[in-house]
Length: 106
Image 1 (cartoon, helix red, strand yellow):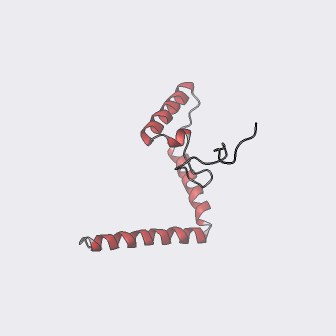
Image 2 (cartoon, rainbow, N blue to C red):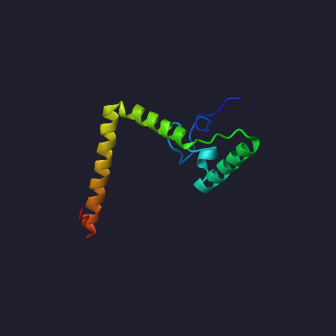
Image 3 (tube, helix red, strand yellow):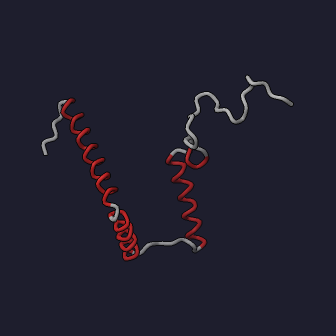
């Protein structure tokens, strides 16, 4: 059966949908945060009951955090970008405070 050019095919986006690929949230990602937490909590409880849950002890958590920090800090350009973003964010927040009459006296 031939389709007419004016028909909306399945490959065309419906009105109001994003034209960018992969930007609409579906499934778990589309749920509100409270629902996500509730579902994740049930999964964690089930893992503990089954005996397959992993719990970090303080030493293991320290090593994992240190390892992640080392990996991130190797990329100096990335670290500089993080610092710039933080500075820009603070600067714009301070501008907003001054405009509304709330000066940041630090």
